[in-house]
Length: 173
Image (cartoon, rainbow, N blue to C red; front, side, top):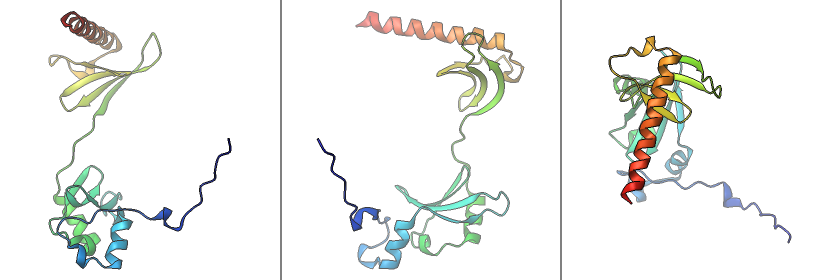
């Protein structure tokens, strides 16, 4: 069986984009259409952090993004006219987005399989991360003071909890 080579069509590089709410389809000219197709677009660098400020249009309308902060553009027409100065001001006033979990302490390698064991800071408090297992750290324990032995105990408790939970599900069926 021979594989057919796909011919590259002239239209293969075109991109479909949604026209944001608030912009009448009849009022979109070629310049605006090309601009919408070019999104996401980097407006420039933030003067304090040096990170890129990106302009984009999403399912909730046009927005700016810089690091973990994003700011919604209230006026849809501003999507075409916003400059770097206004963008910096809006990012400064924006609240930080959802903060992803960050590492508090690396405890080293697990003695059995040499996979990393880390103390992490999460949305619901500190926890121990080992492979795909997350073990909650009790409130009375200081996460920064944990040592590998404490972590191994908490990991084993979590495994025991998961085993018991699975066993109960099977009995119900």
